[in-house]
Image (cartoon, rainbow, N blue to C red; front, side, top):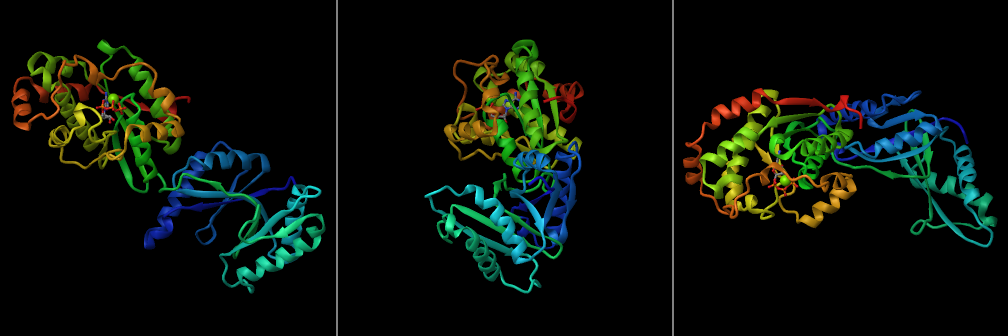
Length: 397
Ligand code: ATP
Ligand code: MG
């Protein structure tokens, strides 16, 4: 069958949105169009909130591949459009199922109908039965049987007001919400395993997650930067239009090393990261920060130290990995495809001038005393002035 295909895109959670439903659907359609903009011959239709894409069979393959990385898509099915007529629909079923039958073997099948157009004169179970019995009539002798509960082959029919689509596949999507529906956030991204997973989780909740990276090139080389650009580029595939802000951090780290208690270094670095991230987010109109922190994972992530860093900002800080263990995060990073990049051997700048015994329970008043000993406000302004902004859409993958 070489005719035009119809892809039905099902969405997740948007159905829960009440009055804002149309806005969410429009956002999802725009995101899909953006991800497909280089594919030729696509036509979109959105009758009564159902999303259809019409295209050639070859393009359909590429489309479904891309739909799998668009947040908000629950699943997609590729099929063909037909008249809502039992004989016509059954003929498609016969054409598809017949090649699956093997001599001496039984194939169990069923028909499942979703009647989006309630004015259609037959109810879903009646359509299932009518179409199913016509297919069975033609293929029973070749080993086809009906089983509603244990079907090996499911033929689905979607009856809408404008068109009826028949298909035999469901390709799972990422679920979640369409990017942009929740707003922009700024994620602190290092080259490690955790932060890309944290940003990805926020992207799936409808956020466009821009990244901010604190770079210490003079001491660490540019390996860390290259890694973070690669990771950000990969995350951008799920969202598009995201930016990476690269902040030179060496002067701040040197000042902390030279003026403050060694045990406090890491927490003091992180307080500066949070302050700068908040200032950049405010400047750009982003609504929150996100990090890859998880309780107790390393010395800087004890409850005391997390409090000590949160205390310097008054913007929401999201930590989507907070209750996850390392292995769970690693598994997710592998599925996402960031793991291989994250384990390339370049240490993060937090490990620069690492004291032998970092404080696991730093006290805020003590940190504040340390911060009177170096001109953090001026250093912060200088770092922001020298910040680089990378437009991730403009880089090749
Ligand atoms: P990751 O694997 O994400 O690097 P980690 O286990 O190494 O995390 P930390 O180094 O303590 O933990 O960092 C915790 C979080 O702080 C990171 O997930 C990230 O959000 C942020 N972070 C750490 N270093 C940097 C950096 N150089 N630039 C931007 N954010 C950073
Ligand atoms: Mg790290």
